[in-house]
Every structure is written in structure tokens, then in C-alpha cells.
Image 1: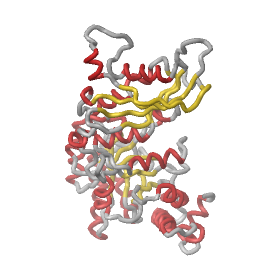
Image 2: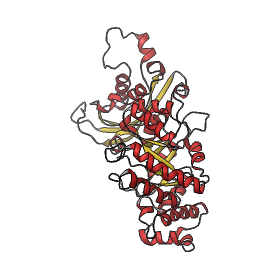
Image 3: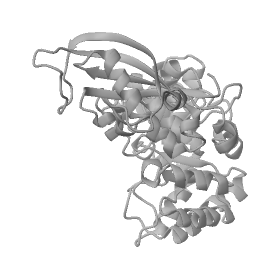
Length: 420
């Protein structure tokens, strides 16, 4: 990658010649028009036009996948192609919202396309100094949790909404005593009238600090501080001053500039929840793939990113989940080891541990289970132990059924949840 240009890779579907369609994309995202205009000299175009680097047709006689496209003729056939464009760095500078606009923006609305998806992009080198990315990542998070050589095991406070601050503190005490490493607010729970964040921090951190004082283990709690920028900065300080070790934001809803501001301010890891990502990803020919999505938010400074989980309750296939986790564990900057912590969540229990490890070949992850812990027939503490046992079996390459014969909590979990 050169310092003066950066690239973006797309999957397109179009009834127009793919090479022509790619030229339309390049023009739209640089010169911004399909005809020459006054002042658009050859010198200006040479310095500022996006460039088509490659077009690879991968499928013919398909589509149209999406409505609204305008084929060049009634008998035109649709094709799918992988397109790589390059953009001049001088068009964008070190401006992350403009970078996102440049590699996506109006592309999704162009009528020559019946499908268009951003797959990935390269990061201009200047962004490493301008944004710096995650402050804590995997290494810093492990240090705060004091958990090494295995996944960080955690859960989500449930019910999502409705518990009082006192009840949330009481539940935190139970979960801490059960042996969890990590607890997080639900994305729906922030600073609501029925559970003000200040009160929730007070009761939850009392439980966390009491447990740390008596056992030496400090549970990491990700408090959802999503809101306006000034609120998030104040909320971060409140969590930090109470002895907290993590804050959480709803990434899409607060936006890149808010996360960038929080990253410059924070003394704590930023736990990024991706709720709403499905509207960008669910259709295979619209939006963006997770390798691109996570890169924007890691540049902004998020340390942990949700990636769903194997055999999850949502529509995402397992292959996409693993692709997302691998993307988080890929260094953001060339020549560095800076990686983010992938967070596996959604319908997880002991049964997916071995498959997750086999697919990812790493223990650098958070493994969050709700019902997989709280609904264990022998209680939350047994639920936590069942997950720890399942991961130990995976690391030792022992079949989970065999390991369960020697570990009752895991055995009871298999009996409860049934099919692996």
C-alpha cells in the first residue's frame, strides 16, 4: 500500500458491463459526476479521481437481487463482479467520517447496480498517528481481567430492562461469586429513568469492589454509557472513579466522532456493541461485510467488538461469525500487533466451545453466555464452571462428552441443553 492512495474492495451486481459500472463508482466517489464540468481539468482528474484497479467477473446471468436498478436494455443480463478501487489520500486526509463516506456513501443508491457491498478497505498509513486505534485491545483487557491462556468468560445482565439499580447490584454479587470474569449491560440499558446510570454504578461497583477485596479477583463490568458525547465523557469518569474497568457503547448509534472523542479521553477499555449491524449486512448484495465495518470502529478506538456466536439465535451463518472474529484479531496497522477482542455472544453455552476453538484456533476472545449460565440446573456458579470446563476440554482436545463424565457441572449442562 502506498502512502498517497488507499483501496476499497466491493462485490457488485449490474446489468451494465462491469468495467463501465466500476468506472461509474470511481467517478461518483471522487469527481462526483458522470459528465465533465467547468473547472474539471485533466490535471485535476489525474490528481483527484478514484481509479479502477481491477474488475473480476465471478458470476453471470444472475439477479437482479435488489429493486430499482436500471438496465441498459430490456434484454440485458446481470453479472456479479469483485471490484477494487483506489482513492487519492489527498481527497480525504485523516478524517474518518469522510473516509467512510468515500468508500461507501452514495454508492449503494446508484441505479446501474442491483447489488453492491463493501467487502474491505485498506487503511491510509497516516491514520495510525491521527487515530491510534484501540488503547487496550486484547493485551490490555487480559491484564485488567487477570485472565490468560483461555477465553474471558462472561454474561449479560438480564432482564435487559426493568431491574432497579439495587437489584442489578445484587445480581452482580451473585455473578461475581459464581466466578465470572466479565459482566455487561444490555445494549437497551443505558441511563434510564428506572435505573439511572449513577445509581447503577454505585450498587454494581460496591458488589464488584467487595468481591475484589475478599477474593483478589476484580470482575470487569462494561457499563453502557451510550448517549450524547458530553454524557459519555462524564459517565466514563464516573465509572473510572468508582473503580470500574470498562465502558460500553452502542457503536452505530453513537457514531464514529463520538467514539473518537471518547477514545482520546478514556482510561478504560471501550466495549463496542454492534446492534443494528444486520441492516448493513443481512442482504448478501447490500451494505458491508464485517471486515470493513469493524475496521472503521477499531480505527476510532473500540477495544472489544461483538461478532455473534456459533449456532446463534440470529440469521448469521457460522462462517461469517468466524470471519468477523478473525478480522478483529488481524493487526490494524502493518508491522504492529494491535488487535481487538472479539466478543462471542448470542445463544452461547458450553456446547459451542470446542467448535469455536477449532474454527478460530485462538483463545483471544470473550465468550458471553446468558441462559447458558443463568439457566444451568444447579445455578449460575455451576453454569460458569460448565463453560470453564468446556473450554478446558477444548484446549486439551478431549471430547466434551468424555470430559463431562469427570465434571458434573458440564455433564448437567449437556443434559439440560441436549444436542451439541
